[in-house]
Image 1 (tube, rainbow, N blue to C red):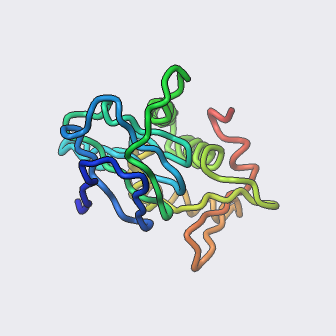
Image 2: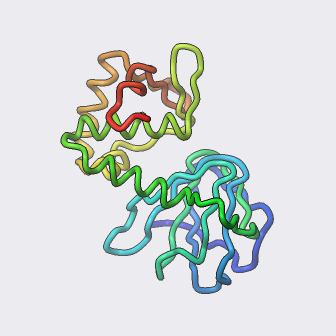
Image 3: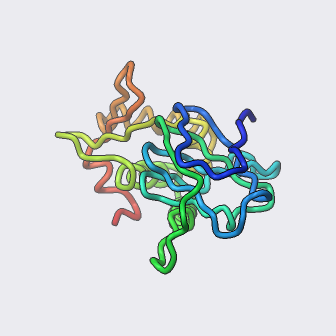
Length: 197
């Protein structure tokens, strides 16, 4: 796995192009410090050998990642879109919401649905509801995930994921515009998903 290391000293703005990853080593970071996303969307995942690549959360502007709550091997932050975050943010106390814990819970709920088709449907809906937006007759998701990554998220193989996505596209519930990094999903797919709020 290829990634760069985040500087030990707090920084007010770290910019990363889409596709780049940084490793957050919790050892040199003082307790209570955190990262705050200023712009873009990031995926937080585990670099541990046993669970390498396991997605823990997705972060968007305003979300914080507390560095004192990382496992001993740290976590990786991957820029899904051009990303800007600060590593000198003060943790918000007392508001009762931790985006990493919330995402982990939602992803766990999806993994416990009965079929791979339900899990994919629920995942796409969750991503659009939390990170996308309604744009005319479609819901836009500003990034794409590989079929392998989607398979990891829903607990299936890349081949099964590809087959399921092909069915959704054939039903005209998903569009993958060529030359763009976004996905378009039909509102019917988003609204009818298992676990939809």
